[in-house]
Image 1: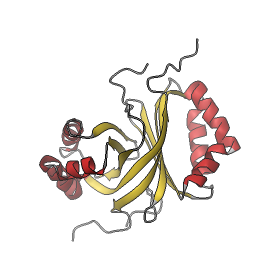
Image 2: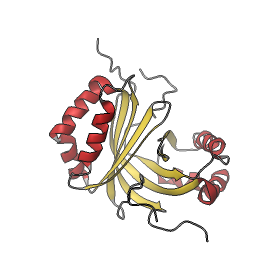
Image 3: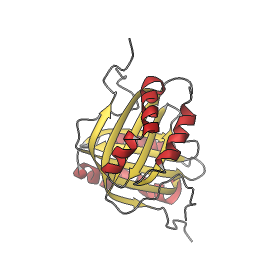
Image 4: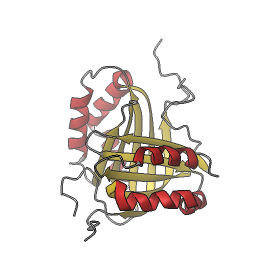
Length: 119
Length: 119
């Protein structure tokens, strides 16, 4: 079993939705890490939130994948007041470039919750 | 403009497909990085390949997102002989846990190819 606090998200059977946010950071922290932590915490409190996974490579490329019940949940999170402020600051100072994609998960497989050790 | 070799993928207008592979590595390299580089190189040569983005956090969480024209391209890449060997080795020794999701990208926005610098 994967620990409850595994960085791998545990999601229900498809279909559900995913937001893929990929970015290149500007130089320096400038309050970014504090805001990123706050946004992850806040996202997890939203209706329809299913999970989030995030990684940033030494090259500067960051990938955040968040999972949602439906498009409505994604739209509501996008419009959340505190998140809107973070989005504006991201465009202004934290991201040199980014892409955002919304996709419908059609199939999934995972070792999460299964025992993959070999006896 | 983002450089041609930007780690951010440049993809066409949706719809297209995405494979989201998230993983936790086992300890040690054990040939992993060499194979990961080879698989990225090989994937890029497949029909229907649109792009790939990859990042691994200090926590050990890795996210690789690859973009494809359609489901057929994804199936063909999954069945590729050299890739099949890598998948088997991944299960046997490189990954402590992983999830794989296939999703249909419905909308996207990006700063790639646009000038986001402020004059």
